[in-house]
Amino acid sequence: MSAENRPMPNAALYVLFKAIEEVMGEKGFRAMLNASGLQGYLTNPPPNNLDYDITFEDYARLQQAVEDFYGHRGARAVLAQIGRVTFRYTLEQQPAILGLAGLALKLLPEQAKVKMILNRMEHASTERVNMTAHVEEDDDAWYFVVTACPCVFRERKPTSPACYTTAGTIQEALRWATGNHYMVREVKCMNLGDPECRYRIDKTPQS
Ligand SMILES: [Zn+2]
Picture 1 (cartoon, protein in one colour):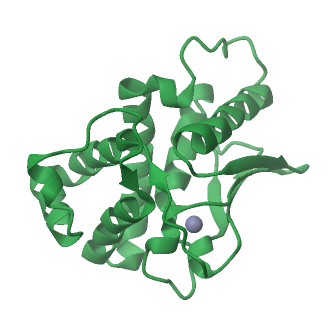
Picture 2 (tube, rainbow, N blue to C red):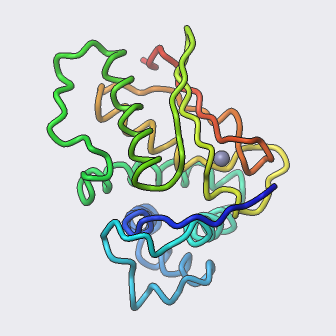
Picture 3 (tube, rainbow, N blue to C red):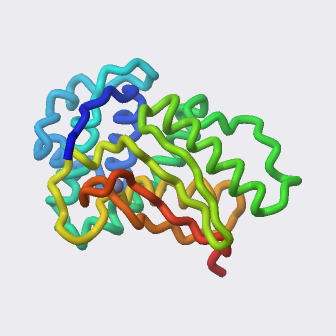
């Protein structure tokens, strides 16, 4: 597996910091920074801007620390929660990343709303966060497909995908746009050796 260490915007790590601190508390957050070898950021946190000074590896190391702390199974729910919070913080702190400001969603039918959000996230992921992505669709589902993901820098899992944070972010974006809960499942993962991280989003929301 080739792991290309790409740059990411500072704001991506800044928002991940905020999300981990909200979910794990300040003490937990500090412990994660120490465990990931990123303790330098304790006194010198990444600025909330779109300069590309951090890397996939930094981002992955912090997620790996959360996973090591809770264990692979236990970490799933925590990482998904961190992903949901990540969406809210990004919306609040870096709306330019998402390009959702002033979006006239209200009058659109449900499926058009979902499609518009997925298209915006594809653009944000590719153009802003440097995680190249595209959207596919069949009769039952949409697919958010990422072909450059920091998960290649995480410890290899033998059996299950790693990107619960991204799944949580997509889920929260759809909830924000529609008020509904959509099932988002990572069905392929670069951490498992797949060529892409592929998220399947059921077209029918859960009641
Ligand atoms: Zn993945």
